[in-house]
Length: 386
Image 1 (spheres, rainbow, N blue to C red):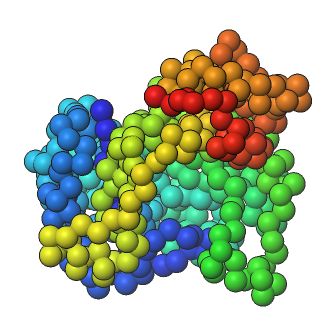
Image 2: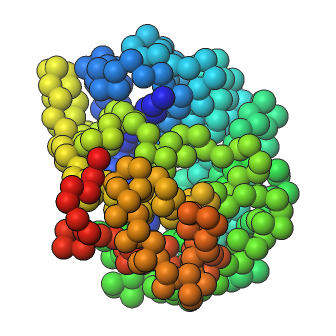
């Protein structure tokens, strides 16, 4: 089974913190849709005959597509690939784009899951982030989606912004829980280079983020959502029972996926490739029948370290038995020894041959993973990888 990701590179306006590839000009949207349809045909052999179990429209703002455009894309995907009858088909949508008519069109096109970019239910937060929607639209979009029959809904929330109090953060989380939203993606605000937020902080127009505040609000979040019955199945993702994101879970399980659109990444278990992050270059190349992705063939060492990084972020954790089967028993034994220090400090927990992050360990997930990474000189023997 495989997944397909489609990057829709358009937004109404630029959020201060965003570093994804997008354009606020819709001038070439029609050209882009034609190129995307053509790329679907050009890339039909990438995942071979594997059945597609998830499709994800991300961006950017996919909800800016018209109903006709979205329907054409979904129809072309179904014509070209073997889409499972029970496939999860997700559309990222901004609250200000959600209306009853559009919701019905999306359902007819086959969309069965919405990921709504709420970020906050408070006006001052949304204005600070430069979001296109307001607090009323944040609430109404969820209610309207539920009324129109969408039961599989995820929303994004951001914490750790300068000036966000714990009380204010709790109200955001409690609001989501009270609406019985089955899936929450919660992110600490990250200041990415060359974003508007980065420039404002360097010019001292806004305060920088506080790591201590972010850590505390993450710990509070874990407690509140555990109490509400949510499963913390990945560092930033929480779901009610049976409501995990199948598409994102496939990434973390190392399944194959095809990325379509400018800046989209693809992975086939042996290599990773990605399209140019430039709408014009993408459109012109694809319409000429050319594919121009950059490609990286993964070494066994890279595959091992990626497994360590990704698996530790999940509730299932790092499986030494899996490491032994895939990379050899010597590597598994060496990795187990490297993890002992974090068992002793309580940052890791162990159940049989699995290591998972403790609640405190989740605060340091990236650092712990990096410390467990292997370098060539550490490899305990040859040949180690199969």
